[in-house]
Length: 447
Image (cartoon, rainbow, N blue to C red; front, side):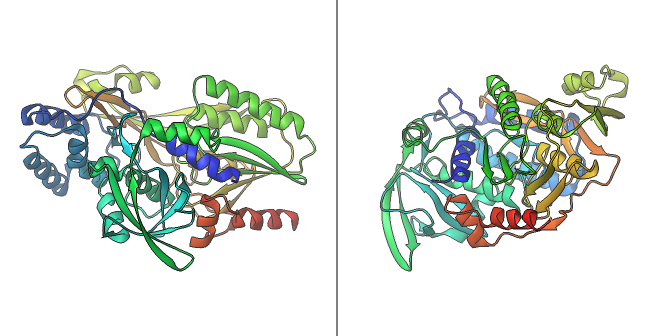
């Protein structure tokens, strides 16, 4: 099993927020509505609302539609499904409601992934359902219909690897979404169509079996191909003790590979994370201190006191709702050992947030070259939000308080554009091969 698959599995596992509460209990409509009205208040008073959608008539219609649905007792999963269309409409990957799952939530004993509007098996704990199988239907429902059903729960409308990742995450949780202990999977492999009844397992059991199979791995790794190094960073959401390990990992990579002529930083399907992780990597690519200036707008609200303090502003009740504009800088300090070879950043169309910032800085400041698919997102995005707790549903909503952008152009345009085919995506996600990386190596060797 190749390394890309190991990273994929651990990202699926670590992308889930595990909650210890029991979600099966039904909550009466009055409490549902109180939590819902709190969400709407947050969106109107705290959300930076970069596209002005909260004030639109369509938003009001969606809100009224959700209100009408909250007229009967619901558990947290039902509440999530009822409210999700609001966040889908806002189409802001930083504005979201938490998926209410726990270690006891039911999941398929495999990893299903959406690629170009089809569902494939990219990892399996079931011997007679091999990887690269194409799922045709689940419980008789065609895959296209299933994908369409789960689109409404995504927080991104744009067709990209990020949207595929979101839908895939939900499809793997079909036993929880549909409240089923098993489901019939109809799949095609090597031209043969088969059906098999699959029993769901708990999230805790799935994690244990993946760990036993030794397929789980950290979201960062390194390998050499001759004079070319490949640094894979599947996520910048690295914090706590793992961040300390990440720093030492980078130090070791650059200390032990001083003879590298080129380095490929592979951030495909990296959807963001912490600025500290981005700065840590960039520090190994600069010989002198680099100040990266950004513009930021923060909404003055009682809910955004922490975000306001971050830019040195105190909440003012007299200017409630006002958008405050200022600038701030990321200071990137050289970190020894500094890599003096050529830097190449491998991207796909769905990189976002901190990942798009990383690629943008590399390109804007002449640190290296970008190669791969053209990202659909820019370095102009929301940030600085707070997790707000819904006391009755016992889950969180994340409402961005600020929006940030560069003074320079926002779009990242690859120096060498490579579009992944469906087969190349499938080969890469299953760990069979990485044909795009092979193309990148050829381009580097010919330069």
